[in-house]
Image 1 (cartoon, rainbow, N blue to C red):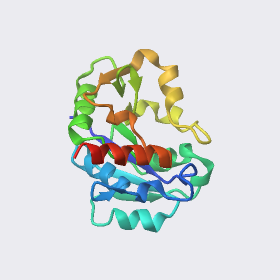
Image 2 (image 1 turned 30 degrees about the vertical axis):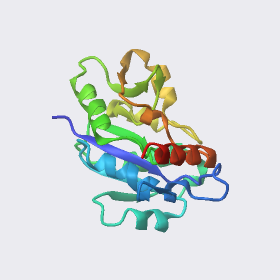
Image 3 (image 1 turned 90 degrees about the horizontal axis):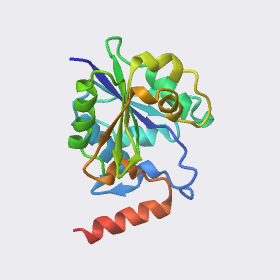
Image 4 (image 1 turned 180 degrees about the vertical axis):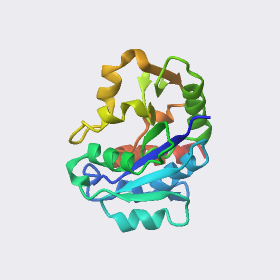
Length: 202
């Protein structure tokens, strides 16, 4: 069985959240980052690495007593690529793939993550797996570690979209049952809409 490690990017400054740290906002009795990490911990991954940066101690405290490995990215202000690099450096030597996740995906369920993981493991010709809903690509994304050198060339506030662009034939799109893989919380408006919808569905 291939070992897939999970990498959670929790170092960002939440610049679009009007002075609030989005990962620490309340959600369903927890915080956003707790909800995201708990779903990943319940999925079929071999180890979870959480990359910290902005307000490191507050995020670490929110996730205390969870079996995760913390990595601090001192260059977090340079953008997302540096956090991905910091996380890759901490991967176990026997990992063959990495699931790179944003830390603000509070609606994603472990069953959806396991669908993505099993689809990746069972794909014979594909080496990247990306979740989709209604034709739109979301997060997290699984990469075979053959792409590590290419990922390490990324700079600035960018994720790994360019890797998908340069290797279209390697990408497996996995249709998800809900839109949760699209629903990261980037703005206060997005957060308020999410909370309003959760309240209405109770």
